[in-house]
Amino acid sequence: MLFNSIDFAIFLPIVFTFYWFVINKNLQLQNLLIVIAGYVFYGWWDWRFLSLIIFSTIVDFSVGLQLKIEENQTKRKIFLWISILVNLGFLGFFKYYNFFLENFITAFSFFGTEIKPNSLRIILPVGISFYTFQTLSYTIDVYRRKLEPTKDFIAFAAFVAFFPQLVAGPIEKATHLLTQFYSKRSFDYSKAVDGMRQILWGLFKKVVIADNCAEFANQIFNNSTDLNGSTLLLGALFFTFQIYGDFSGYSDIAIGTTRLFGFDLVRNFAFPYFSRDIAEFWRRWHISLSSWFREYLYIPLGGSRGGTLMKVRNTFVIFIVSGFWHGANWTFIIWGALNVIYFLPLLLTNNNRKNLEIVAKGKILPSTKEFLQILITFGLTVFAWIFFRAENIKHAFSYISEILSTSLFEFPIFRGITRALATIFFIVIFLLIEWYGRESQYAIANLGLKWKQPLRYAMYYSIIVAIFWFGGKQQQFIYFQF
Image (cartoon, rainbow, N blue to C red):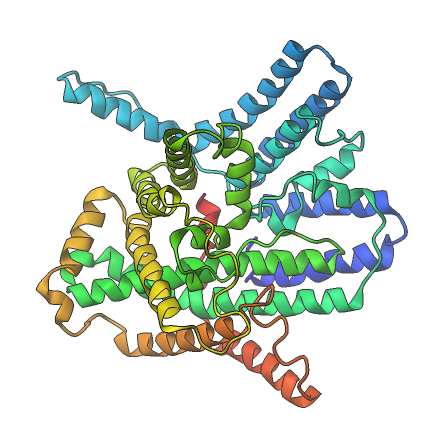
């Protein structure tokens, strides 16, 4: 079920009404409703894959209980590995089986041996990478004795299947989200209003920015061999704003929706395209995934505690795994490797934590130095996104080579260029609003709050009109495929 669909527009008010006006006095029933709503929300796409979520829920809940009562360290490790192997086994099979099979065949053909096994037509379950990491955080934290295992199966199932963030995050740790299911919740009007405001901005980012950009990014990338360098550069820029508007828009809608139900999710984006270096970019992009890798992979590997070689090795591991997490394609691994190359100079010179505050805090404009830093970081990011979007490595290199040719200085020509100008106009407006609200949790969190009511509501209605009138053709959220 898509957030920007009529199905969800009907689904959400029904769940909200039952949650607050029918069973609001019974915490257990509220949690049960969240479980049912989560299964309906997920099963709307393909009900067959509900069995994966339910099985993972049962396994991790049972492992948590065993880790509670088991004192023998060897047996505790066995239970932990049961959870890891079940969850990563599902993820590996559905997401990476054909990738490894194809590369296995290629490797043998290189040595003159031809293998012709049949690959399977495997459908990737929506959001499997997200809820897999979420449930793993529970068993790992219970194993580390950082979290008391729950005996409430309904609360745990609600934590796993919480519909706002089930299929594309943010990836929540059990220490933050699961504990919220234990406490009675009361309706907070101001919190709900703020949630609606964030949902509105998320829909604008998704429908007006991302969906419109997707139309032109897809057209240009899919026909790149017939287009000049300036058009391909424009296509890369469209994809850059498509993926940001799409993914951060989803996160805004998810976070805003949870606030309607009395929950708080972690922040997932913090205006990453205003970053002054790549280290800052990764502190502001997909924050929940970066935090997950840091806590459950980077630190266990030794983090930054060892020498230079260990820090370099661990950084390589994190970015390569992050690239591979995004998809079973060498383009994602190269995308991760590029970000390592961007990041290492900062790490080796101890400048990776230089820009911790938001750029130009308390000021209207950045300094000339900050502006140039933002442009350089943005340019490096756009270049890396080409590999992320390309069909394969060959496509990425041919795309880049044409951009670097003399045709870069020709006028962009592609079908629908006049309509593309309207999208560029909205991107400019979008960037101005994001810049104005960059010190807030989301761009319009405080915009207009001190204005007179007619003016404030005029702003909200303008956003609504833009969503319905200028929204692009409905596109599936990009991160559903990851």
